[in-house]
Image (cartoon, rainbow, N blue to C red; front, side, top):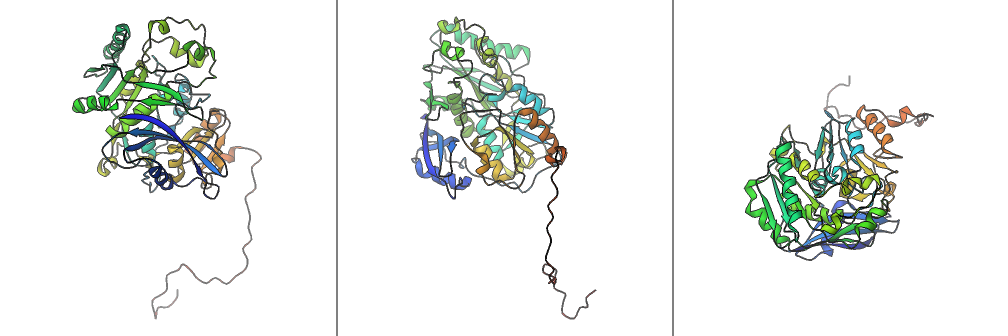
Length: 452
């Protein structure tokens, strides 16, 4: 079994992207019988066409629902204000495209929420994970399915975390990874039933797509799936640490001052998407240090967004901290209806970088969830969100995350965001022509009844 990415250009329908059902049918027609889509992004669009990039799992897997299946929410639960924050992995986002550098954004947005739901790319900072106390750490494909209405999230006190690592050519780095697990066990009480070593190492390679996004290939996935099947009753979440082969020298990456897209994150996301999609468990990945030579590099004082990477040896602690209390995944109607389970019905808004179109954005569009797009968080994605068929007042494009927080506060209070800006527009007044009322819409009185 292997993972890889494929790109495709598709004509726009009436200058617009199709529905999720339309996209699902189109991609089904593109893929072979043993190919399963596990990741999807619209990397660029115009009035005439849309450019897609699709992460594909190739190999025989149990059949299941399509990742494009939408379960419409009937209404919004307004008893709490819950927001979803997404910064897609591997798109070179100005904020959140490096090493957990969107964490301050997560903590700021969480201050006006009852619950903030976000994903590893936002808060994973190597040895650091400063997830807000009212935050939920949800793997990216699970977060998409959550917004699609296909799964629910149930908060937990803790998880049993299975750790899977590569057999490293230099035993020093394998020992360091085990030490990171033991450090988590001895400090915040991580439950780890076992560490499983993949020998030989899993073939994982980070590459760039035509759009410049980080993606890659993974081979021999059946070895990972065999481990997950063997120990299925022992774990609630999965943390992985494997070698990732990339072409970019580390010195070049760190000296780029953030101009280069992180080459590791995209293929990491592909791997966890495959695991979480097939097993319905939280998962996250950290790359292993490649060699002593890389470990001994002195990059000097780097861009602050990269600093968490250069002070770590294993990059794993943020993953373990996130997996420790990542919410349980529920799928049955009875479980999803329980009061302690969050579903798409409980989502009050989605916050994304401007220009990003993937499953979360399209799910929000069709679910009627308000979307806040932040211009300042620039990335490789080249889409005009205003071309999507939004309902009135559903899309809000703001300059920065400060403004996003204010807009969220207005939505939470049920206020029109424009009411706190000046000038305040005049209300529209329309004059209705004089016509005789026909009584359309009133029930017809029974024959013989008198009108009151």
